[in-house]
Amino acid sequence: MKISKKIVLLGQFGVGKSSLLRRFLENVFETDYKPTLGVQIKKKMLDLPSGDKLSMIIWDLEGFMAIAKARASYLLGSEGFIYVFDVTRPITYENLEQELDFIALKYNNVALQVIGNKCDLENHDIAKNHLEKKGIMVHSYVSAKTGEGVQEVFTDLAKKLSK
Amino acid sequence: MVKEEDKLQMLRDILLVDDRQVANAVNQRLDVITQTIEERAKLSEKVDPIIQEKLDEFVAEIPVTLGPTITKTLKKEIANSQDAVVEALYPIMGKMIKRYVQNEIKVLSETINKKVNNTFSLISLKRKMRARFTGVKESDLILAEANPPAINEVFLIQKGSGILLGNHSTTETVDKDMISGMLTAIKSFVEDAFTGGNQNLENIEYELYTIHIQNFYNFYIAVVVSGNYTRSFESQLENKLFKLSKKLSPSVSHLSREETDSFLEKFFKK
Ligand SMILES: Nc1nc2c(ncn2[C@@H]2O[C@H](COP(=O)(O)OP(=O)(O)OP(=O)(O)O)[C@@H](O)[C@H]2O)c(=O)[nH]1
Ligand SMILES: [Mg+2]
Image 1: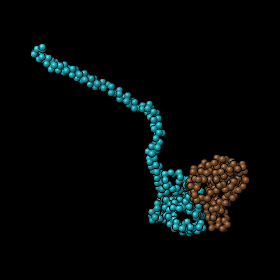
Image 2: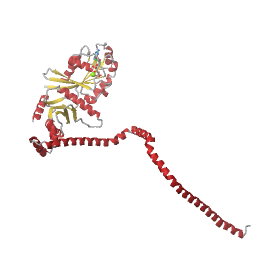
Image 3: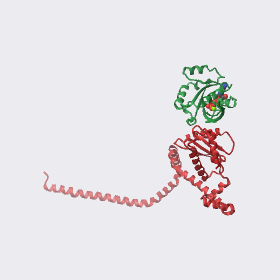
Image 4: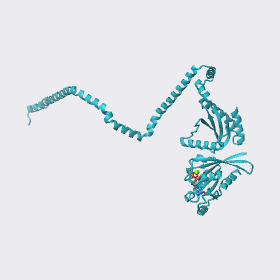
């Protein structure tokens, strides 16, 4: 059987949402920055252990300053969120607590994965310490550039959703 | 002591002399007034034409001398109350545009009717019969015949998520799941833009296609139509989709993608 699930990529401007998606789908990386306007929608078919097919319909949103400012209608009907921050820019994770509170309040049923990107550039200890102190669970620290950890970001979420 | 006689004199003075003086003064005044009136009449005879002339000159010069000031004031007034001006003009403009378009369509339809009248053939006879029996204007039939509307694709899409629940298409093209997501994003973007409440996007036109959108409770249906999307086709399609939703709504949430697809295929083959 074929199952479709909507997944949304969230996070501030330029944290690497589109780059992560391109790495996952096409296994490529580009250094120049082309901001996403509005939303871009992609699809990935995965074979599930049960023999079913899962088609992940992935909505790559334009960056925002806070999730409360994102277009709410784009978030409707989602089953998974991937919240991306940039380990090299504290501004992209300093308010994560409020962001996650907002998600817990408004999108209680949506599976959520928090991802730290651009690990190739800087040691991610600063970000990690900061977030651990606040008790925020980060799924993984990855790099769209090297590809490290990128597949798992999506496949782990797919596993969660197909349970 | 005042004598009796003096008293009488005084009384007479008060009563008569003063009286006469008053009468005199009044007479004098009357004379002055009469004179003034007469003089004014005489003057007016002479002056009136001059005033009239000046007045004419003044009126003729208003646009030149006062024009810029008036225009400036008006402009300022309009700028300061744009909403009010738009409010006032909108119905008039709307009517004008509507009338213009109606007229253009009438002209077009008349030209076609003329052509119809000039060409007499078996086909046009048939068409005439059809127009008579169906009540559809003959010219509309011609328009439709030239490029008949056809259903190319049907998308049954979950509201909100934009997940494709079912699809029927006569062509194998781009990824249907992505199209249905993008359509939903466009739809919600447009609908968000109208903050005035429950506005629904019902039509998208692109190049040679029209996408007809019809909303139901949990899903919406998008139909890609090629060819001439006429009013009569639109209402036929609407009725068809109402029928479809009646049949499908109770089971739509537990049908699989494949089941929905084959349901759509059967439904639109008919
Ligand atoms: N070094 C390095 N650069 C990255 C990485 N991921 C993304 N970038 C760069 O960061 C910039 C922004 O990446 P995007 O993927 O466009 O970011 P985005 O989050 O989609 O941005 P918006 O669509 O504007 O919200 C680009 O110049 C990328 O090349 C990474 O892992 N390492
Ligand atoms: Mg992007």
